[in-house]
Image (cartoon, rainbow, N blue to C red; front, side, top):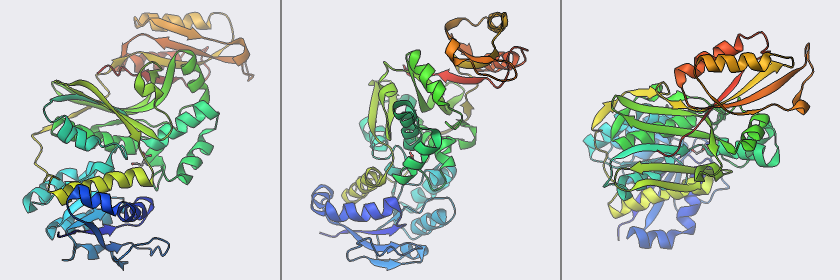
Length: 427
Ligand code: HSE
């Protein structure tokens, strides 16, 4: 049996773990693949003598992997520059590619898939979205009979880990982020995680696959979790919600609603219960209805599991050559969204202020669903003030922006108003 010869570019958290997984599970991987999957070449700018590379040759030249003695290049370098070159070189040399690089695919996926198609080589990218969850395979194979009209869920493990640590352990944001970094969940630059960029990249990849379309990544609406306060998490819980960082993509007649932001999710909804580094992706198909996939979204082993799954498919001959997308769809961002809103309004503690707040909402014909104001929450300042928490009923995005602006202009409002959307995950 001819082995599948694997060239590995990058020996970070995921690269080192792929080498280990290929070695530890070699027998079962061989049985499932129908032939051995053998690591033959490894390239990394920094040698890692602690990692057992078996029989593989090692090179510090990342570009050496397009050479004749590999069948597939596994790109685990990250970033968009050297990684793009390594992938392009591999495809140009007729090698298959497996990558975990969402930044690369979100920005250059169309070009990479087109050149792979022309060269007749496969591109595996299971590891680029939702870590160990086989969501690419589910969309490509398990749901192949469906027209998918919505994808939504938690696609950044670091953000979910931080929000959970804040909610369940009362940790502050910085401590929770440091823990996520130590556990190998965060990107090299963790602002990609906490500012929503990583999730937006994954959402763009999932939406392109699910809707068989080229999606304009720059049109995805992006907000991260860095503005979320532990107080918001506690008030949300009192109202019966968890705060989750979500990616939501829905098909509309004129394009794709694509947005990434923190949201209040009812605790009764399954995604509202998904905690820690776990990711959850809901895909709604016209035949099957809503389906939900849950699993670890970051970390060495879960991501290596997805990388090796692509290698097994490749060895079997079932990893497809990418086909050009059926259409190009404009991103509609968040503009058409209509949902309830959570508001935290810092208000001076004096008569009439709440009436003014209610009056603004009433002028926009927005109803108040719930209110929390606690005497013990009063803060001292030039004048004592208190956060007023309001849950509104449904209001379109433009209306919500307008009433927040008007509320901010009231003399009784002392600072910035926090607004968090409430997510409807009923698809
Ligand atoms: N930093 C990413 C996350 C890793 O936290 O989800 C997986 O892409």
